[in-house]
Image 1 (cartoon, rainbow, N blue to C red):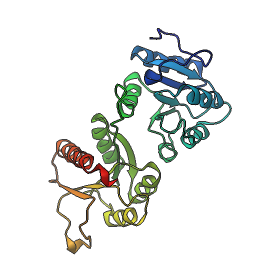
Image 2 (tube, rainbow, N blue to C red):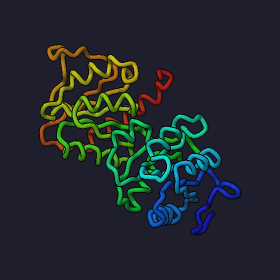
Image 3 (cartoon, rainbow, N blue to C red):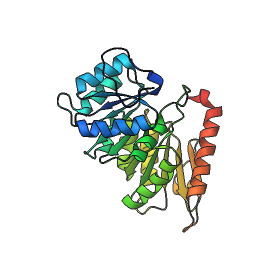
Image 4 (tube, one colour):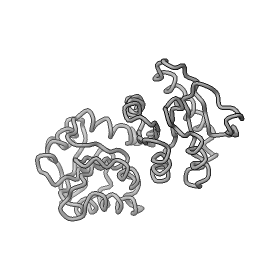
Amino acid sequence: MNNGNHHSLEGQCPDSRNTILVVEDNPQAAKLLSLYLLQAGHEVLVASSGCQALDIAAECHPLAITLDILLPDKDGWQVLSELKASPVTRDIPVVIVSVLDRQALGFRLGAADYLVKPVDRAELLHALKRCVPREGGASVCHKVMVVHTDQEELQLLAMILVEANYEVIQALGFEEAFNLAKFAHPDLIVTNLMAGGMDFLSLLQLLRAAPATARIPVLALSPWMLGSQEGVEMEEGIEFVLMRENELIEERLLSAITLLFKRDKYSAGEG
């Protein structure tokens, strides 16, 4: 175990199963992120430029990468694109840690999570825990997109799922949901039909019509069961969770999602 020193590319790579690459050109920020990770028992590699980050990632294949966007040579967007374009590095989860709040673009380019500075220790470790494999096993991180027309309600839904260890993408309204879904490929889309102005039918039609999103299951929180009178042909891939107006949704929502993912695991051959 590396006690307090982070590695450079010189010499051997540390154990890739426990190593996080911190890409950060601000020495103080790099030191703080490294400290959080070292205290949590990780080995740490630090890169202060985009080119150095790409070299280290290819050579050492870390467990995960934290990536700043404002770098001196290539910016973080370019680094992320190149990481995801290479067969050697594309499967490494990348958590963006930046002062720029550009979540949609981050997910579109393949980020596993997006944290806006300043980031505290719990937030960083939680983001990494969600999407890195445990003890060499396969990653069990499920990516869930939540859709709502109200920003506060959207954040509330997202918080419920983040606390349950899901990787969450937030989409405000159905158009943003469809555009993000094409790039982020969530495992599930959760929407609330009690949201004012939520055009669920349009969202469903767009998702089903595009090959990239046609097979993404949709979970709809609903005060009523949609029937043929709504113009929706009931089809596979849509689940309705019946809710009463002021009911607490946490338990019902989380149990519905758990059941859905369990069922999908058993029929995993379906793709």
